[in-house]
Amino acid sequence: MSYSPYLLQGQKALVTGGSSGIGAGVVRQLAKAGATVAINYHSHGEAAEKIVEDIKSAHGEAIAIQADVSQEADVKAMFSKVLNEFGTIDILVNNSGIQKDSPFLDMSLKDWNLVLSVNLTGQFLCAREAAKEFLRRGVQPQISCAAGKIICMSSVHQLIPWAGHVNYVTSKGGINMMMKTIAQELAPHKIRVNSIAPGAIKTPINKSSWDTPEAEAQLLELIPANRVGEVDDIGKAAVWLASDDSDYVNGTTLYVDGGMNLYPGFATG
Ligand code: BGC
Image 1 (tube, rainbow, N blue to C red):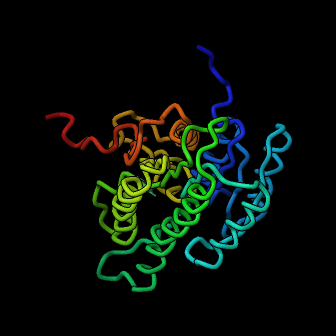
Image 2: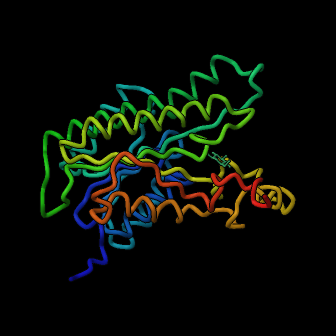
């Protein structure tokens, strides 16, 4: 038996929302595992270019592509660029996501639609384009035993209700059923579709809940592992789900949350 240190050697990946937060962590881990990575960004072009430079200076390959994943024309143009540059695509990490929080009664239709269109419709549009290419190309056994892999970035909030965030939790609940249905439909074509459900990870989206000792202590009450997660925790899970090591894993959600989904309030019986 031989082990490859580069689980994703020769594979081409696209990570949406890859210029910051969890997306940037995923980009770096995929590149470290040998993948060539397209980093999609919406508005942080400089941050995306910086990651491209870092990867190139470590002898990896990466490009940055601007696109709004909620816009069909942008998504189609982004996939054309990826296919032109890389020839094909093997891995899609559907990661772009935003929060626009407010109490339910104050939530505007605009903020409801915005979050649903980026977090849920964006994943639908990107998954559809990726699947078209996976089906066109089929399996290349020397690259991967799958025709393609899609990883949807969900959240513990596909399971845990969250007052003040109805648009966000609804988008994540939707991702769960979208992911499972696409997985069911595409499995016969050797395409695998799975989700990662992160818990609290140190990123800009939730900075106010961990950047002071008081806030962090309150957050830790919700995390049995007693630490706030790092983006690499998610990046490493993404590498595994994208690799042939998880070939028999399809249509499932991998919770990477330090146990946040375990109803920690019940820990003392
Ligand atoms: C949210 C974060 C939050 C975490 C745990 C994530 O999906 O984006 O803001 O800290 O869930 O509640």
